[in-house]
Image (cartoon, rainbow, N blue to C red):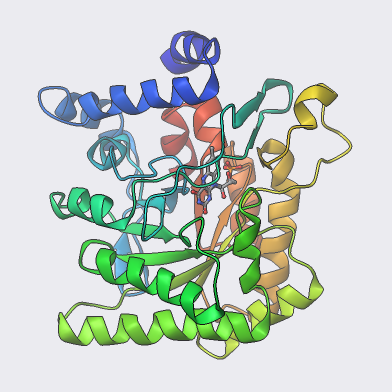
Length: 344
Ligand SMILES: Cc1cc2nc3c(=O)[nH]c(=O)nc-3n(C[C@H](O)[C@H](O)[C@H](O)COP(=O)(O)O)c2cc1C
């Protein structure tokens, strides 16, 4: 209530990226003593427990935070205290990425959406690994990993860049979401082909297995984050990869470059380049979850994400075949009480 009547109006008066930084600063403070326990009391303790086992780990509820909100794992303690069942931090690349020039996030309040072309800015794997090493998360934390921005090279070089990130982060996270699907970073699309997918996921999987043996670590799933704009051929490649054991799960979906006809925002905003998220993405993400769930018949778990902002949409996502769900834009519009509402 307080969020929608007071905090959101204040934040929405600011430039979206400044508002995001302010929210992160507030969460950094709110996550630690003396405020931390209060945050738990107000939010975490009121989220009903609904434990589910997946990939050999326990999720206290099925509602997670999607990638891109906490890009450098700066506010993990606060996010746990808000009641999330799991978190995705990142995207993280082996070397730092500056991202695109600002402005690079745009609000579509009439549509309850966002358009962003952040370009995956982040401090790089080493710095984020150091931060994660100081934490003892109580919920599964997955690292969303991407390629370093200006790396142009052979398929092997690009795959090795992802591998370096996985190696650095391995001891500190519960698993990995492999991001090959950011619309504002077209270089990531190089991995849509069969050979490229096998090289990337095969290399990451072999490294993951080796590190798990060396470090006596438990199983850490490799989950592929997929664009909602994949074509038939790319869908077939992903199905093949899942069926042959190259990946352990799917996150469906990332943002879309499409602009559905029903958008109410002005053409000046909808014409901004970048990926659309929030309510207008929901039908697209839902269709994608349903399609993959039917093809894969439960062979790999699916995390459904895209425009979920109400229990009804969460329910439809689950019915379509999502084992877990994630939120980002809905969290911005509805605030932290959405976690509890959805978990219920
Ligand atoms: C500002 C912003 C930054 C994002 N950054 C990332 C990212 O770094 N990696 C990624 O895989 N997805 C990223 N996403 C996509 C979200 O994780 C999610 O897939 C998408 O926004 C759809 O969910 P939603 O409609 O609930 O926002 C980003 C989304 C937004 C709005």
